[in-house]
Amino acid sequence: GMEGVVYLGFELSTGNCVAVKRTPTDRMNLQRMERVVALLEKTEHPSIVKLHCVERGKAEWLWVFEFIDGGDLREFLRVRKGRLSEEE
Image (cartoon, rainbow, N blue to C red; front, side):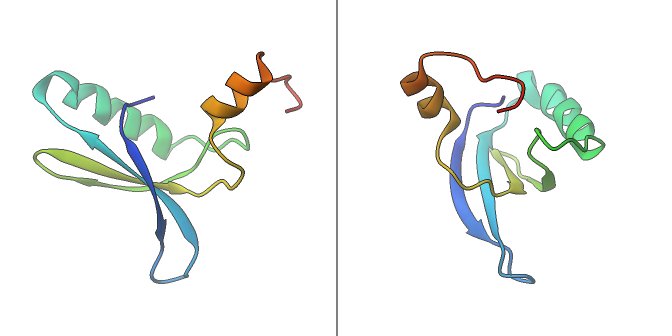
């Protein structure tokens, strides 16, 4: 995925937790980011985090995703020392 910092946020209208990812923008990755948004907006799958919206700024974008509780996937895979099975 895109490099960036992820924060825990709250959707004001519902009070639900969301994941807010900040990614820097530049001309080199702007087209790639637009393709990712277009793909995520039409993707609906239980194993893929749902994109709620994207706020586009000159220096950075804020991506708002559904919040998945349970920790960091990278750390989970590092500790587990292996891939996930299809069921996981």
